[in-house]
Length: 556
Image (tube, rainbow, N blue to C red; front, side, top):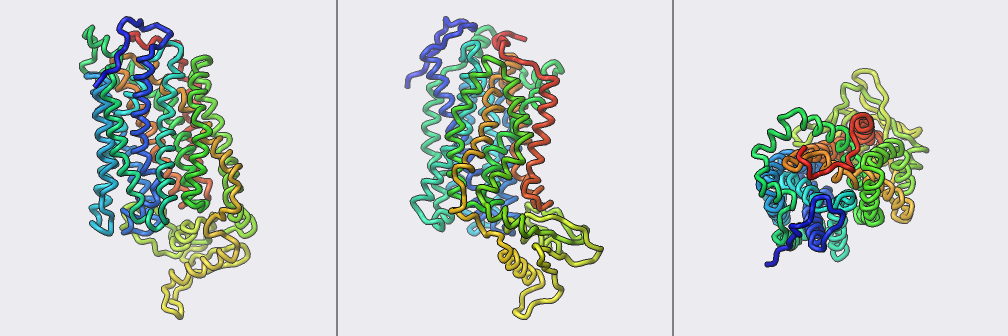
């Protein structure tokens, strides 16, 4: 096997890039695409995963549970950043790459052969969550290494452009996962895909793992790190240096709260919450929603490099801050526009026959029950569960204490009864049936009509959401690399990145979904990314310094 070599005579300040270095960067980026593909498969198949592994609870709780399992992978990413960041700063970038890709690939493949809840009961979701945790740990060590590796190969004044290719890998990985899922759906029936076909994209990952390992084995160590090794300047305790000394810790905190937290919520709103909004709220058929997201990703992905290159000229900070500001100002009109063009029947029904739940607040629970142990049986809970499941927005109105819930749909009122119906249905069942009939009669659609979807306008609005992603995410790798010294760069940049993206971003779909279920306002969940992005915008504008002219080879 041949190894790619880097010209040892090349000086740190050189503004040119050799053919070998370009190959190194391409190989690093390609391997990262495959790793993101593995990670995003789960997010793209959340609805199917919920039915396969969490079928022991009600559908709403199952979907929230599936989102939490998705978020579990994000929750442990900071711990992966600590473990693998330490390794990357002590023994090198290359060997850390190999470990993370092996863990990620193996965990993804096992999901493809894991028996579901019907076959092995609670063991199925437990094992699934363990696999998600392993994936999260591996990914926690991947990004910081990839960004550091590419930046340390890039010529000065071109770091934004070259690290932007790493930024495209997450979107390309998601795009690849969507394409393979769509291909599987196209060649088999919906029942076959939901039964066993969903496993194929996970099983395919074993081939991607083999390719990725082969690519990683061809890489040599980063020139900057190799030079530190030769000079004996590598850190013996990178975590202590990175987080135990205030001089560096304050920069870590600024990176988290003044850059990454806002970048994360904009990223996950544009690429994940938009998909959940289409499928779960607007009831757009899954294949159509995936195609719409895929089209927007295809159109917007080149702008990662555009904004990365632009950041080499005007700075990283102005572009990131502009993206945050635009997101804060336009999220509500954009998502309302998506509703208008993707499900106009729902928009019309809300305008002509608004729904109000009139109930005693003491009977209304916050229906966030991921383990499925609680039973929501009050009249208020039954009413809200039925409306959320149907994707019907509603407002809340307070009723006197002890009063059974009443749902007003336009001029029609449906009251919760206390007696079983003549056909033997329980009060809750009878109420739900009456409510469903009234909703249908008022024009609320069971699903979005494909013929009424304005494909061009929905794609355009989704493109704008992803364009914001490219603005905040395109320059982020360069600015994070430039904020920290070489000896502790891997650890220092990885932790804030993965806390921001793993926690602020990874929990966004679950949090927003629960907020919508609690309030009945299908747009209420947008307050989460808007508030976080606004806070990051203020902190970033006040305290984060421009870094594009920093010397990343200096020991500072």
